[in-house]
Length: 338
Image (cartoon, rainbow, N blue to C red; front, side):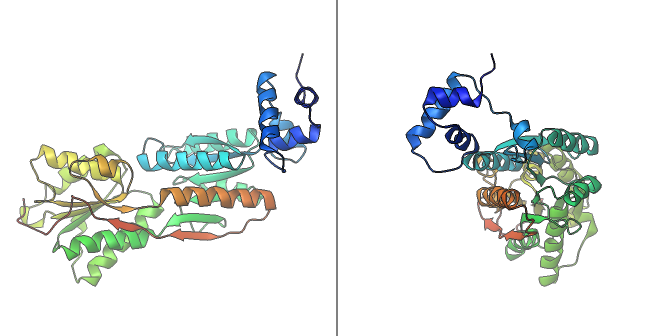
């Protein structure tokens, strides 16, 4: 026999309205009452029909989160923050990793719509913008996280990538480096801005741009290694003494390749990463990097989305967090070239 909300209310000794408030995490009541209702729901194996609630216009209390690559420590840490904050707010979250695959992007959006999610957080370099534009045209709440795309008229939460790129490069320049390479992600709005910051810093210090020191590549540890190997093919007088890697997977790859070639960091090669994930403090030597406030960015995104879901109004707000240079052990004064 199917258990109903009436059965839960009767066994818990409360009204149906009280059970509904517990389900939707609303209203004021004693914590002991709330806990008692939850215990009865568990005891009776009662699960609210969220799709029925959606059809009645009450929403499903669920959010869809599309992330670029969950294996990237930055995105996995971000996903944990978002999941925790969503649950604090009485919602649930579906997390999908798109892997920069257009087919997966479309598939996951469709699946989330079938699940009647109340809104979307997109932290992926979305290739098929028409799908996102369609969601926006239908007034489905959507927040872009880490992706500040000017073509999409929605709220956006991101880091000042230009400033981060400028500070990373300036730190190397202040240490006397003039042959500075950048390894940036391909097809990334964030990396585009970090590259602009890199170029601006070189201009400030009157350093001529060498296009051979600019590498655009898909982000992975393997491609970080590949990038350093490419730079080592340059004539010795053109090889970089400093490298700015636009994410920490690329930076770790540079460190591994340097070790294979017997290049000492930072004595022979200085390195700056970007993100300040757990990787940055577990490497030997510890990585100098540009920190993103992952906790603050994730929590702000969830709060903003839920506010838009509950109000039915898109604020189209742009929240820009400041990056912070964290100096550790992979940068130092320029010395003899390797």
